[in-house]
Image (tube, rainbow over all chains, first blue to last red; front, side, top):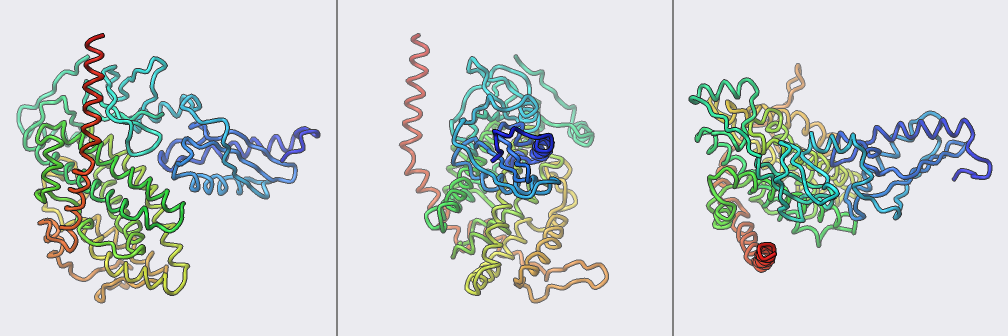
Length: 163
Length: 316
């Protein structure tokens, strides 16, 4: 870990930012074009002056089957950053992931390429295909732990809801 | 909010719409011939996801180690979940209801992918399925997604493909473990490969007729034979590279082009599976049917709860 008393040097700040950039290229195995940064999985990035990087991630669901794969992909992306000598990936148990952590970019990608939406604050749903509000919940369980299934009565499409 | 219904003068007019890259939506006045063909295709896909999910489920208790059990749990949920979404899309087409589709599947009157008519004998069979069969299914689904003209199916396929790609990575990881394992583990995989190579190659089906309506209507973007050939070209060298033998004594490689050529395919086994007369068809269908009837109480309880909710809302 970084020696906090010493404070980050210019070099470690630059390295940290390079590591963050590298993390932006790592995508979620279940959304191969959405970055884990945009999905809000990256919580901490620490780099020591001798180039040891520690990346703290938080899982969407603790039983998510993609965790090991994401950790491997993070290591591969960070290891090749010039100046990084060694990478550790840790899964944090706090804070708990919620859909509030997703970026606007991720939300737009989820809607336009995956027909997946986030619930509005008042609990209602908006269809990402036709924009209708006539979207009703169908079942709590869908193909993955992090999504439930809904149906748009207007354009008659399956809509999945990230939760 | 309503969506204006689009309609076409005749099938030629409709074909021009498809040729121009048009996407058909459920709110359209869909030509009956298209509706029937596309429905049959989606129903077959939904049935296959359901039967495939049950295969994965069989291995949850037997998977070695917690991590693999977790993966098989997740894969089971994925496949059953895919079936759920596909049955929603299929039922909406108004040809058969969801319960009719399930009833016919469990009665043995419906069809599903050939690969789910065989028995997975050992854990290595399940790895061969994850590595070979998932890859074949993935290639064929990607080819459907590429130009798919039916909007709701294309949107569901996008998520299915993303998840199947993830399964393939698991398949490769598990295969590597056996490939780098003990001689016994390698023998186990070779025996499984001997059982699964031909069913996987046959999954693409006999070559499409040139006038196959599914090609014309852009449900399929490639002929079956084109997909099978690409699959053979990719997996023969991969498997040989891991040190396994392809169970085809007449497999040849063109010295000039480097292209692999399998021996002539015997389509009888595939045809038998399409009549639900494959080696394990009877047991698999019976298991699926029992599973469905054993869980009827859950669906009944959910219905009662839903009615109670509606009654409360009406009263309020």
